Length: 228
Image 1 (cartoon, rainbow, N blue to C red):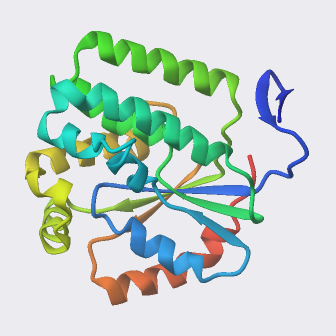
Image 2: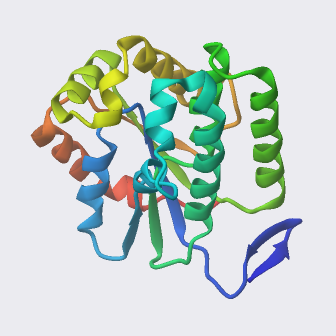
């Protein structure tokens, strides 16, 4: 059940957890970060619902978008917006919730990139923007901390080649560079869109062993994020 709270809808009878969003480019190391924190007691980890994006009643909108973003960008991003909203509003399972990306980066990074690159028609962008604005103005989607895994596009490109996910084989370096710049404008320069929470920047170009050490070093700082 949802009920009004300060003009927005929130779930009845649930104490709000601390919400931490792990943000970063494709292959920036978000999965490694989440796997590390998933081993800590009382942390609920929510990964991106990629399996859903790959199979909507037998269709693969993620794969279709990478093949023909102009045709399928609106299809995928509409579904991404829905599934990320579902992640934000899903039943609470612990005092700390750690999410892979957010509904905010879905809009501010990936929808914006499609539009600015000329691969999303203006009417599609307008419809998605209207939906996003209604959601964020009418539904409470609190975030207490954003952990930005800042990674060079070249590093991401090499990691993509190594992990060989089918849909990602067609991703060029230029795409990763565009995503990187949008993240920098949003979370570092903070000149493009409102940032919904404080940002902790972690350099994520290092190998697995060094990254795990960084997560250990920053663990207390991350988990002590104050509710907004």
